[in-house]
Length: 444
Image (cartoon, rainbow, N blue to C red):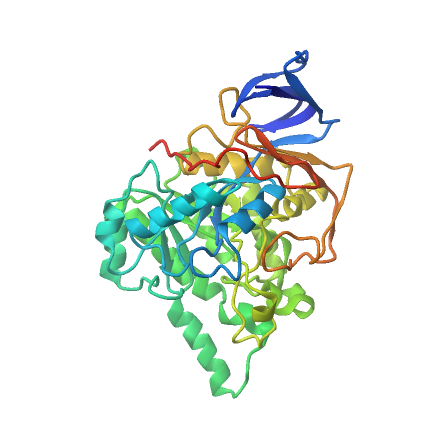
């Protein structure tokens, strides 16, 4: 079998950027060196000075399968993710039926084994009655338990204090939380009703405000401290919440925080133009919150950047604000949006790699992924800053057929993506993998 030799790459790994060559043999990175002489067995790819990054590990996606496949599927959304430089993902339980037991988890793994383009794992969803299912999880196979604290759909809302304490006390894997306080949101909604005002999209960050976020996230942090639990708080959106999290190396933390690409890119000033297309929970908030999140990424209060990719159909988004579903598709352009922060010196490319690849691998204890190292799986993305990417609804790969970045021209381009050593994206076409993508393995 031929090996692949990537020449003349600006390799970004572990806080450094350096010119290097990388040889891929089978699924793995075989050799990294300043200059590797090609052999007869090498398929040579000239990177021409483009950045070679470890593939993004997205710890929060909603791929909508089973039960909601008119919005997206594991096949369609993982294919779009690969075009976006995402080589591994962890998928959420709010599908139909909800992923709240072993049988539902196994069904998802079986679907991914047949159809996923990227490597995968799936969360078990916590309910107020499935503690036995949580306790029985295999820590080496399942990425974590998702707890919706205060806001959710279906049977996934967990508000009962006894149920929450049991989860934080007994869970054998990482707990990840969606934190918005339902009582605060209800009070905010009642205020509009009492005044006879029908809210619109510009009211979304006022209804799901900083107080709602802080009340719930501070409760989650207090439970984690009480029971010495491993907690990862998803999609932080407010400056106020940042006081809950410490700066420093992720390896030394039992409580970590995540920001999502859309909360780092958009602000409430974008609601008039984009409307329901950027309606999401928790809400996109003020410029000051966005700037605080970017600073928290820089100072290591925010440990991980993810997408919370959550597609809905165009028709579903065209209804009135109150009835429009929350969520937006993001995986294809997430990395490109982060590189805009690099262009404008808000973040360094080394910080982007740390938050999208290194830290997810460390926090979830993922085996041999997230870094460009010899002996690791060759999950790689080649990005050129010499070429741009013009985004449109027509060109995006999501099943839903639209993107919140319609009309945006990003200042970089994803040239290639490798998953398990196989080049699946060449800058134009996503190729179906010749071998199945792999379930993530966790060294816990």
